[in-house]
Image: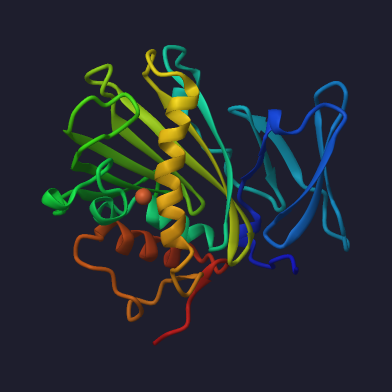
Length: 288
Ligand SMILES: [Fe+2]
């Protein structure tokens, strides 16, 4: 495996573990952007991260935030994404674990905020055949184009969450603050007017494989965590089976290739936004 030379990819922050996944006094080997890393947790609970094969590269930067361990292999010109809802104590934090996917991180992110797949992939929970049409929503760029948002999304969902008792129209906003992070802000069914968050932090191992670290910040006092987790894992297993069969694994950004349907305004915006970012890693830039 070869470390990427893509500076746009190198100069970003990535989650490589949830801190409690590595017990004190243990180490773990992982791969980020083609670079093998050794993560070591001392008996004092502090983390160290070293390149398995340095080859003259500087040591990685390591931070702990939101319960996750973040690493940058380069020199990021921005901080780790700000998610103020992590410090709102009335929410329940649910660590959804880490799941490997044999595809690019960008394929996982694009699938996450594609509303048109709900009815056909998550039939009976996030969508149904009788309400397959995607209502209009808008795409916005925020923070000087650093962030892509799809706002005003809505969908009739038979069972929108573990807490759902009946079908309802759910309103969403999607935030993509980095090519490898997406957070959905979704109507709470328990607290009207409040949003639940579900987020994906992608660790790209190479251009065609990644691990998805994910979390939820929800208003749900009724369901036990295992019940909520079961709901999420069922949904993600359905997504994973779709991702396994998408080719090419790298996300095409040339507008002439694999043109999404008209309902995928957010997919088109994501691909154009990635193209303008200068990122090469995980993208298929070949023209048709
Ligand atoms: Fe999905």
